[in-house]
Image 1: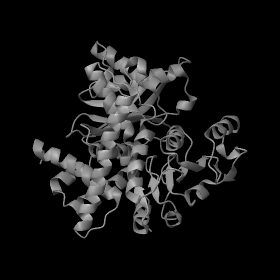
Image 2: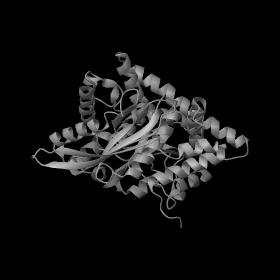
Image 3: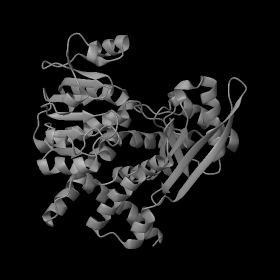
Image 4: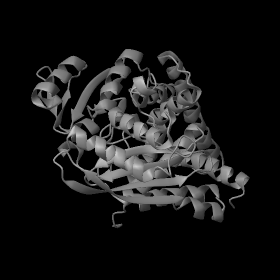
Length: 421
């Protein structure tokens, strides 16, 4: 049995597989296997109680051949440099697949945000930006929120950078509140982008989404929006939902408000009185048309991939399907749509926010959704076309590998044109 890989080595293996399939130039492959720049900082922060604590932070700028680097900042007690490097690589491919003019980056701070007071979070956010002041900017590297970071954290970071440069620079950070340069449509952009991908996939698989049976794993931000958008946009029937403490099922379709009430009062949707209690495992293996993993990574693995009964798996979370499971699903005829296509709506609308900041001209929510629809629908089409082209050559590849080939090819082409190899 293969030794468990760390996240960055896993990202390198995925790149290596794509490079072999596409016959990638060896020099381009060597460049793309490692980050362009790795930053590691030790940040002293004066806490609300007067004590000074030193926090370790990271910023990985993976590749900027296609434009300034872009990626979120995570506040997490188990943050590792390997994880941040892997996420920076995946952001590079995500931006290239969406064909937006960014490279990829990611950042993180080792901390427990739940134990920090608001004053401590503000001080930490500002310290992070001060430590990176020479390495970020609207034409260099544009951070955004990620795990356990919020629009308020982004507002503090933008404000601190503006102090450093001596003028307002809203475009240095995205994911900000509307009042300080945020974009309409940003809050539900990840799930909305996923719904546009689902619409196109359902057409391809000839699935009528009206009354289609849907299971949603996760009842956080992405899962909540996925539930509401699938029912509102398509008339789909969400029959199962779960959170970290269990799940709820109803063959007639679940009522979102009752689930939300149960979650608020008891801490779990599994306590919804109008539904049957189920486990996360039962949800994943349920006989549904659409399965939407929108919780955490590594939920569909070699152990359960052969038990997945959905016709489409829509990866709204990051990394919910392992590479080995992806191959099993592909061989079984399940359309597993990869995370860096499905959940790219977040970075696409972050790009829109950056464009609006630079222009000082702001769009309506309808404008944002129309532009998001056009970009992510084209990305889906590019992936499916590439998959068909390889099939015509006698090579059967999964949608994930097709997405990698599209993305890696775009970055490599940009490097070639710029004379990097």
